[in-house]
Each structure stands twice: as C-alpha cells, then as structure tokens.
Image (cartoon, rainbow, N blue to C red):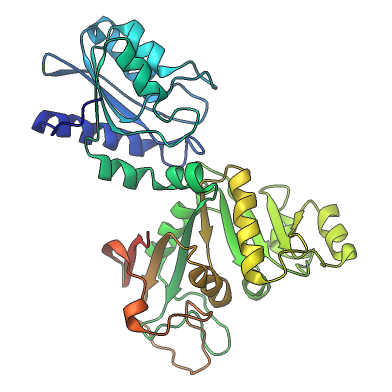
Length: 371
C-alpha cells in the first residue's frame, strides 16, 4: 500500500475527517472515534462519523449522504475500514459496492480482528490505498482506543484541583471549594464521557461524594472506590444511589465477608483482588486488567494523594487535568496532589506533553498527556 507524501488536499480532507471523528467522543466507546469524507472531482460529496456504539460506521454514514456520487470517489477515513461482521456489516464491502476507487487512511486499526485485513481486501479489489496521512493526529485522537486494543487496559485520566501553594486541602481536610464554578463545570463534562470514576476510601469517607456528572453526559460512569477492607458505609451517598448509577468497591482478597455481603445486599458490586495481589501496586495492576476486560476505555481518577501517588509510581497515568486556584492555605501537613515514593531526581521527572493552558474564571486550567 502507498505511503507517499500526502498532498495539501489529502491533508485538508483528512483534517476534516478527524474533526468529524471527534464528535463521537463519549458516545462510541469501546469502539473507536472515526470520521470519513468522500471527495469526487475535488468536491466533497459525503461526510460521516461514528455517532454512537452500535450505530452505522463513519464510512456508511458518508456513503449514504453521497448516494450515487460516491462512485469514482476518494474516501478519507481516520482509521482502517473494518472487514469483519460485528454489530454492523463490513465497511470494506460498503466502499467496494459504492464504487469508491481510492481510500486514504490515517492509521491502521490495532484491533486484531481488523489490523491490515481491511486494507488488504480493498487493495485486492483494485482500490488504490494510501496510509499515514495525518497519522500522528489520528493516533492522538485514538490513544485510549489504541491502549485498550494493545495493552488491554483503559486510558487513565487524573484530575485534581489545588491551591497556588500546591495543596489539595487544608490541614483540617477542608477542600470545598478550591476551584471555581467554571472549573467544576469542566470536571462534570469529563465525568460525563468516561466509563468509570475512581476515588480512594479516604476521599469517599471525607467528602461523601456522589461522583456523578451534572448535567448528565453521554456516558453513565461506574463509581469505583478503592477500599481494601470494604468499609464503605451503607449510609454513604454512593451506596444510597447505587440503583441510579453503578458502584463498585475494589477490595482485597481478605476483606471481611460480612462487609462485602452488606455492600452487595445494598446493590453495590464488590470486586476482590486475588490473594496473589497482596501489595497495593499488584491490586492496581489487577484492577486495571479487570476494567480492560470490561471494555472500559477511559477512567477518571479523582484522588487523593495516596491513590494518585500509587498510579504515578506505577507509571499508569496517561492524562492530567489540573485546576490551579489563586489561593494560599499553607500547612506542612496539608496534602499535595501526588504522594507515593516519587522520583529521586529532577532529571527523572515525568514531562507533561501537548500541554494546554486555559483561564477559567479565576482559575488556571492545565491539561495534557504523559504518554
């Protein structure tokens, strides 16, 4: 398949396809976000994107819009067209039937069911195929899906709000509210597009949070509490609302059976690590593997310091969303965002990549990726 340098028009049309693909965020997972643009004789004749899980794929949407104008067209697709029967028919068959003569793809699909098969079928049918146009941009958009397909684990997003002197709370544990309303609105949008929201037992006990998105987003996140001994009170807000949004308590193998039974009787799922996962690091690894088996694509970790520190030490954080408020609280024992062992040298510091800085009311919002 061709990997020749892309023309200006190829890049322009692929950029539009990526823009369309991003509209599926939070709606299509565990499927990938995909966009498609159909062009014939220099004119766009059809556009489409994967709108929700189980719905027609981007190529089918674009072909429907184009109708007969798709014959002889070039299809710009952000991800390799599928060649297997899933919830929808193969996109390769739809492209061939419509008479598309050239397919330009940003990146190959890491899904073992697809990985190269779609491209091979198109080429075998005489379609000109070019791969790699805006591949970096596509890989960035698809990073959570790629991780799920290749590592069988979800993309881990960390979020925290802190004061100007780097504190998550005061020495007395008070943290409401460090950030302003515009920052909290961003957090609720994050919650509304992820598969799970994770907190530690300390945060659940101190704040008694609901961990829901307000207003509701496209996804209903499972609320996960890391609670080795299953001590989450049945009177907590999380347990009381378990019938409205799923709650999972991640406990150790030796968690008291009576506590596990009480939570289960209240509608909470209790997942217990194996006895081999004795250390917190081992339990984290086993939990992330379990969430991957459940096809969770994005999970949001909302602290606190111990939880974030364990993930940082394990190299398991993928993305950060940090809200910095222009407030000072002081206190040598007031918690900072990331605990754990940390790194011994500045030269070992983990860099935030593709960082973006925004002003939200009085707060500064910094977000970017670690991988």
